[in-house]
Length: 432
Image: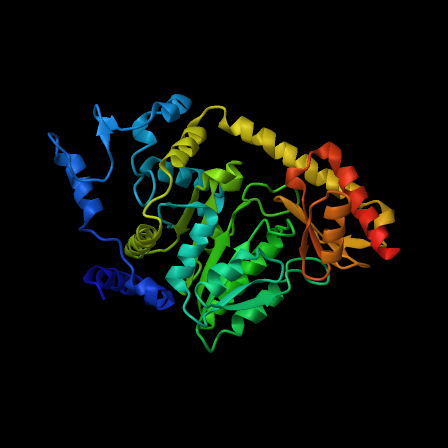
């Protein structure tokens, strides 16, 4: 093992031996080199005032070389904020601004100890870093039966974690904290589990209420007290899009500092929060009572970034930072929030039509981009195929009976027609 990795591991052990035990083999071996091209280039940038012949970019007239056909279209930004490499951890100012944003939007974080967000290539990359750091073959990765299918690839296929699902909803259609508890306590023999909490949930658009949130936190603490090391990941992809009757902040704040055997990790990003999907700017943030543990985990995360993508897109980070600092940002974001909320409320009003009762129920939704129909009379895949070929309507079939509808991408005035066509498609299939 590289001595630098060993030093990081010793820091983690000294700060919290349970966190060390959570690390995967790769997590224990990975590190960000203190000595190498990047560190030498950083030193040269600070001190080599005459000639800096260190890093692999081209310069001209003292700035990064660039083409006018590109710069002319991006002339609002300086070439230094576009063309040179961003640091592997991300632009320092962006990290600082995002941390401040987290504190403002999550009051429960005010007195908690958590690190500086590390910039990722959006949320999938952040989840992949978590998988690399903490998942070994056979480790239990716990998330509900209604989930984003990429979890299987990220935690299962890539890292050979053992997927453990539990029903998302109880019979009363509230969050199934008892199911989470059963799945988690079943890992006592392994002594370790990775729990993924995704709210607003993809695909259902559900976020728990305050009481349910307290139950989730209590379950995580109970598992820790039972001797299980729990890496609990809040996948906050759709954070902020809370329309009614739900938590309005991430559970990361309540989970941070909960117990020495609980490591809380927040994965979020500008991707969906700020409506910049193609920019691919996300963040990963660790919580720990020990500053040395935070520093070591951050170093290891940056090591994985260096070993995979080297660093994220500099222009995207510049664009996001510029937007976050703009005076108009809050008002413009609120305007888009109200559009999304209007669509969600319109869907609920439409679904309350009694004529739909015979063909579907719908899972609770109060946030995010999506809602899910639970079909009663036809299979989801048969309906999906029929709708796309006969009516030009695209939906997502999940399992035998669930059909996901992304109201986020349908103008409010067209939602009534959308559900009319889905209903017609069911009638067509029933008449065959």
